[in-house]
Structure formats: C-alpha cells, structure tokens
Amino acid sequence: MNLPQARIAKILLWSCVDGPGNRLVLFLQGCNFACAACHNPHTIGQCNDCGDCIPACPTAALSLAGGRLHFDPARCTQCDDCLAACPISANPMALPYSVADILTLLHRHRAFLSGITVSGGEPTLQTGFVTALFAAIREDPDLAGLTCFVDSNGHLGALGWQGLLSVTDGVMLDIKAFGPALHLAMTGRSNARSLASAKIAHAAGKLYELRYLIVPDQTDSPGEIARLIRFASDLGGPQRIRLNAFHHQGVRGVAADWLSAPRQAVEVVAEQLRHAGLGPVIVPAVWL
Ligand code: SF4
Ligand code: SF4
Image (cartoon, rainbow, N blue to C red; front, side):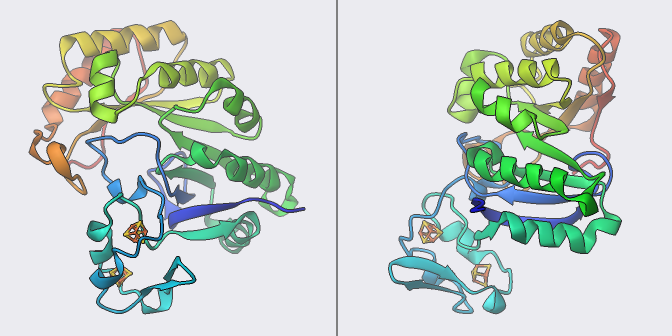
C-alpha cells in the first residue's frame, strides 16, 4: 500500500505536556492560521525552495540541488540561525517522513510511551498522513494500547473530522478568542470552524481538552471570559479546560510588545470557570 508522507518540523520522543502520559510528539510543518502569539512561528510556512536561508547556515547544512532545498542533518548544529532568514516562516530543517518511519520509531520506544500526539503547525493540514498513521497504529498488535491524539486549531471542516475522529482517541483544541473580530485580528482567520470543531469533537466524546490562551487586555476581558463560560457550558457535562499563559518565548512581530500573562491573571479566570461549574480547569505548571 502506498501510504502518504508528512513534512515534519520536529519529533519529540518523550513529552509529558502534550496529552495524557508520556507521548511521542510530531510537529507537522505548515499552518493555516497566522497567529501573532505563535511560539513556533517557523512552523507556519511551507518551503518554496527559494534558497534565502542557505547563506545563514554557518555549517553548510543547507544547499540547493535540482531546484530543491536540501538539508543535511549530519552537518546541522541546531543553532537555528536559518529560521530567522526565511521570509515566509518556513523551516528549512523540516523533513519528509513516511507512516512506516513513524511506526519504526514507535516500536523502538514503545515500552516508554502512552501514546502519540500530532501537533504543529496545524496537523490537520496533513490529514491524509495523520489518518493513515493512526489507522496503522490501531492495526499493529505490538502498538496496542497506544492512544492517538491531535492538537489542533480546529480549522478542519466537518467532513475532515469525520474520517480523522474515527481513528483518533482525543483532541486538544485551541480556541484563540471567542469574539469574531478579536479572533480575526489574532489569527487572520474566522473562528467559526474552530467553534464548530470543538462541538463535533465533544459530540463524538473525543474532546480531551479545550485550550484557551490568556493574553492580558485581549482574551481576558470580561466579555471574552463570559463567552468562554457560555460556550463551555453549552457543550454540557464535565469538560477539561486548559488555560495557557501568554509569554514571549519564540514570539515575533507585534506580540513581542504584548504583556505576558501573570499567574494571578490566569488564576482569576480559572476561578471564574470553576465558579461557573466548569472544569476540571488546568493552569500552567510552570510560569515563564
Ligand atoms: S540550525 Fe542547522 S541548518 Fe539551520 S543554520 Fe544552524 S546549522 Fe544550519
Ligand atoms: S526554508 Fe524559507 S528561506 Fe529556506 S528555501 Fe525554504 S522558503 Fe526559502
């Protein structure tokens, strides 16, 4: 069978912050949002082989061959100098991986893993790969018990979720803002699909976590929090909600001038949610 490949910016062999337990995490390259607050802006673009990043590499790990950018991991010292040189926020170090490549990694580290999470970028831009990978994991008796999670901005349409949810155990879904104008300003996109996706995943019993980023004076306004409370209440039943705190690590552009979210501001919102009968509500374990 000819299974699809994905372009992957980074693989973490073990993570305890990307879903339940200890997980292998794939950061897929490319995103359909342009979030000002993005902590990994180099995962947004898809390389167009322009070559602009090549002179930035001090170890000649980047070159053009046959009009395509070539990355030599053996030469790379992971200085990240090339990332700032890309005019379209692509990552010259992203590499193609097949489903078989990822299955091999999972077999190798199976004893230490609870599951796999696909993140990004936006992993649902490569839904064919993710669906094929999750289906292959389910069919592999040696990988039985591993759970398959998606960390998404929710911009995938209803039809896309239909296929993906059939092989997915849990979705962690970010709502960047509830007010349509604020969401558009923060991401460049409408939030209509994200809100619909949260409802679809919840109705399927697979919305593991609703995520919301606290940006002082923007997403923590009384109006925004009231909308968050109304939305989560309307989902019905207990719903895990994770509040993330905006900080400047990795951020470029206008958001570099935004205020970081202090612990107290996040705790205040968490208490409002709990007071409204929502939760469990999770706040950051570490404050930057
Ligand atoms: S991160 Fe690697 S490829 Fe990029 S500039 Fe540094 S050595 Fe070169
Ligand atoms: S990573 Fe960016 S700068 Fe480098 S070749 Fe691709 S598009 Fe051009």
